[in-house]
Image 1 (cartoon, rainbow, N blue to C red):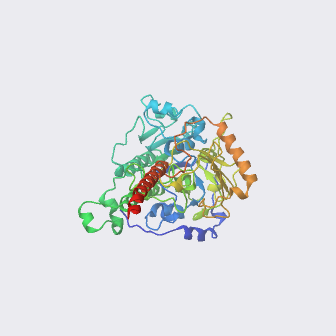
Image 2 (spheres, rainbow, N blue to C red):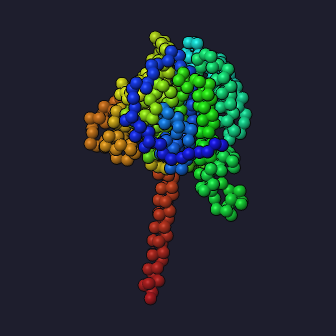
Image 3 (cartoon, protein in one colour):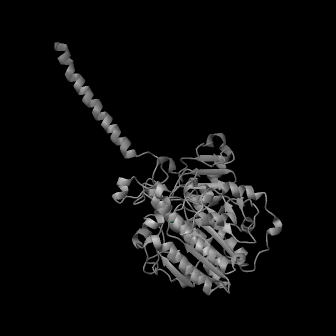
Length: 499
Ligand SMILES: [Ca+2]
């Protein structure tokens, strides 16, 4: 692996913002190549350029230094399949009845009021691209349906596929080799199609649990390893495993970006990097290592509608078009914006009968902050893992400086003012001080909830009650102790009285 530089680039990027020169920005290319990279369960704070103090991600840091970094980018759902549905459709995933992650178990999908796979007959990003002359490829994780009757990739407008978590999976390598392998395939695809416009989904498996990081991949993090005695017994620390996996992913994504540069395609190729949801919680099954991922300053992790579950990294590189070194902390951008934005940049008109939940954010990609026209909405019917403080209500919206959350039954109304709390930590609920906003946002969430197909709420979803069973157990224990004490006291009375 090449020498790695580390450190937070955020301050450097912010400093360079003032040096931007509009004259350096080229006009839009006619049909740019588009490469959309989606990491799996990478938290907002898990890259050097987003302020991680130890993780080494020099190639993604360089991508940010050469392009645009957004601090307010959101996915449409806090788990895998629905989040990816929003990218492919430009719509909230519940509109397609995709409320939780897909499994290949038909009965389970039916029980959750879900289909077995994303409907290939709806308006899809890859189909639009293919229809308008793009060569399309999907490399890595799919997770948009894997039952035996799942449609072919051709039905989704995908020409070349090399995937896993799909019926037609070909990526049969250990997770620690997965990024290398899918990048190899993507590079071959780019070289084979460099004379025409291409669209790529490159969706990594890393750093989703379970990680099997090699000793070589962990080597840059020896200082975070175990004590010698534990090391001799074969132990590695969560930090070594997780950081090593992310740094390896960064290295291979760097190879991909360098290939695009070497082929002379940098000014013709829009590259976007993001993550499908917040970091895994340490309480998850086999997540002792992935649980060390961080959402930065935010409350919430994967499966939560607090910021940490749905706000993720977002980096854009398009040399000559996206101003280098720009940090946009004003624009609020969502995964539902990607379809209209990519199509706009490719000169593709959207079908008349199609309505995106997002908007064209091309101007953001070209270096101008944009105020979004409509609020963003979230609906999450699953349970939430981990610490009580991360368990959010199951509906949420973001409108300008406001974030509002509540449950469908109207309980747990929480209003946060992100101007008063610029770190967006969602700790100061100001609902009592702004009854008009609470009423307005409650109505908007109720209307949103009524406008989408209903999922099946998981028992305990939307609740932040702390281990109710333990509380009941402690109450019983307390009662038993009281009764025992009372009995002892009663039994002692005659003893005392006889003295
Ligand atoms: Ca995920």
